[in-house]
Image: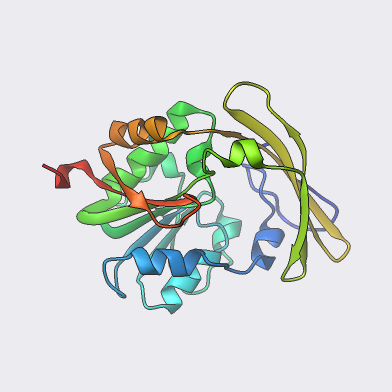
Length: 230
C-alpha cells in the first residue's frame, strides 16, 4: 500500500503516489542484467508490468529485447524512449499476446492486499508463453527483520528510509525519502512479508510454479507456468 508522494520540486505525481520527475532521474542498476541473464535468449520478448519511466524497459531494449512497457500513468510512459508502451492498469491488462518473459519488479508482489497480489500474478500468468518465465522482485522474508533506517547516495540522489513501523504481524511500514539537489520527494508504503510457503501458494493460485532464486539474497526469483510441469 502506498500513500501519496510529497515533493518540494515541480512535477507530476501519479495516482499511486509516484513522482514522475524522480523516476526519470533514477538510472538502471543491476536489474536489466539480472533479467537479461534469466531470459531464454538474447532476443526474448519482454513484458514489464509497472514500468514507470522505462528505467529497466529501455535498458532491456538496448540489450536487444523487444519490450512492451506497461504502466497506468501516461506521464510515466511519455519518458520511455526505446520500448513499446501500453497505458493500462496491471490488474485489467489483456494485450492478447504472450511473451517469453514477464517482469513484475518494484516489490509489487509485496502489496498487503492479497486480492491485488493475485490480480498482479494473474496478469503475469495470462501474458507469459507456455515456455516462458515470470521474473519477480520481492522484499525477501529476512529483510523484514533486518531492515533499519538508512541513508545512502548514488547517481546524485540521496535515499533515506525512515519512520519504520510494524503495524501488524508480517507488515512493515516506512517512508522513503529521495533528495536530488534542493528537490525532495517522500513516498510512504506498507509491505507484506511472504515466507516461502506463502510465496509458493500465491504463485500457485495464479497457475505459476516457483522455479528458483536468481540472486543469493532471494530478492529476485523466477516462476514458470504450472502447465509446463507434469
